[in-house]
Length: 513
Image (cartoon, rainbow, N blue to C red):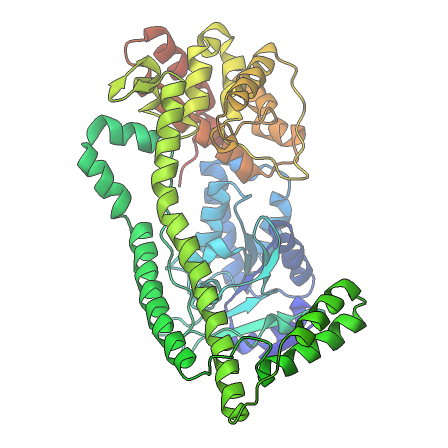
């Protein structure tokens, strides 16, 4: 069913006998806007249900008061009492858990959610509605893949309640092609992905023999897929080679030269095209070539022409396959090339030499995120020599990639400047940018939080949503645990990491569901 440029209220009215519904939206902010719009027109709960929802809300607020005091909570609370909600990664875990709990208790009738909600196997619905089937993938807007669509549409239909599930798409008249093309028989295959990180290389060198490393690089799922496709292409190329030879055997010896009537006719058409394009130099050259060639009489020009056209088609396809084969072969080789490049980089930086591990290599072996950058920060002495709050500010920016509109209060700390210089030097030495991901933007949040700021104050300092701030600190706390393991023997660094972790892991950040 196609619903063209209608409001959420009109959609719900049209499908009100097919509720509850998961309304998939590909923007956090838009989930909230659409929920507020629907809340102005609809209230799905009776007095008994409102009382039950109110009781669950009070329980949640009493258990984790800090999680339910941020901006927007009052509006969401009102919506929950109407049987409406929104759910996205920008919410704190206790808030998301409350929404999920209410939905599982059949007290929510419309939930506006991002696609991550579709991963919850315990959250089926009678219907799934798509606000759009175009999404931003980090680079550009694109149409949903078949598997993405069916992952979300598959939430529709509750076992024991619905004979069938229903999926609806709201169609934007500017993009009429955005529906009617999903095919459950054309689900995109799962692709293998092998990431050669510094930790991967260090672990292989530390714990595997040369034969085991070779097997690891050769027999992973990504390599299996590449080699399988490479083999199929090779077989098809060989078959086409034979087919080309067969066709060529049926052609006369003049084929492909300007003495052949077929080729001369084709050349004269090319002359006309060159005249129209004012390519006089090319036209004159071709004209001379036609004049110099002595035409031969062809007694079977129709057959010759058909074979000639068929040969061109097969040769074109042959070249396409050759190009794909070359690209696949390059990908196969790139796995080994990337491994050697990272291994050589680690040797250049003094982490290892062959199978011999130095202090930096032993330290980085225990890290699983931005191993080189974190190791260099630690070995610079910054984490031990700086004030604990400064060290917390440094580590908050590890692997943080700010969005286009991300804003935080800027913190002018010498420790952040020194971290920037360390990163800059690593880049100058040839360390790939993907191994040096760091931003100073979360620094002010970590500095303030370490020094006792409230979560509400953090939100006032930044454009980040509560869930994003929560994720920054949970990542930092996990990184501090890794540093504690990596710093074996360095009591001062272990104690510093433990102290920072203990100060960060409090109140809203300590919440886990």
